[in-house]
Length: 178
Figure 1 (spheres, one colour):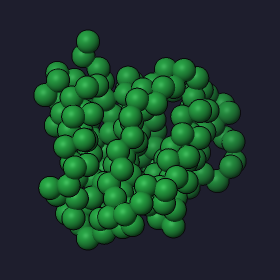
Figure 2 (cartoon, helix red, strand yellow; figure 1 turned 45 degrees about the horizontal axis):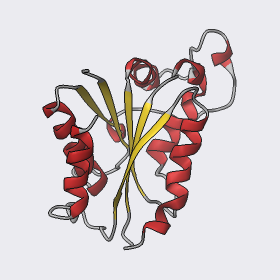
Figure 3 (cartoon, one colour; figure 1 turned 60 degrees about the vertical axis):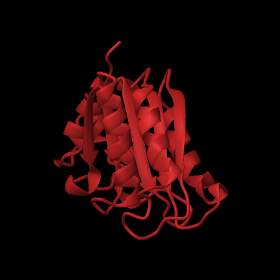
């Protein structure tokens, strides 16, 4: 069955390692007949949540930026892929803003399949534990969410260092299995 896949690339570098893994996931998912869209979060404006709770009135945020569009796409998706490089053992600012701003409509994002993509300069997966828990914590707040897969891009720092590494093939294959 064809699915609507939304990839949220939190990489601050276009062509950065986590962004390249997103591209491989996208390629695999498209080749399997799915409708896929990648949003490069750095190219969107998503201000931090200011906790005004204006959104309690119908899910509209007081901040007028690109977040309404992102939330519309999250609601329409069957599958959400969240990708971030590890920043001080956590997610990057671009992804954090999107997660926090989803407070406007988080109850309207149920029953999603989630895939997580993370990259880190260190060669150990345990440096990604907190990053993964940030993703999982968000998904736990959404009714009916299911974790479908995790990709670890380890030992990569310079943009493009992920090229030729096993994680590239893993991302492609995981995309094909959507």
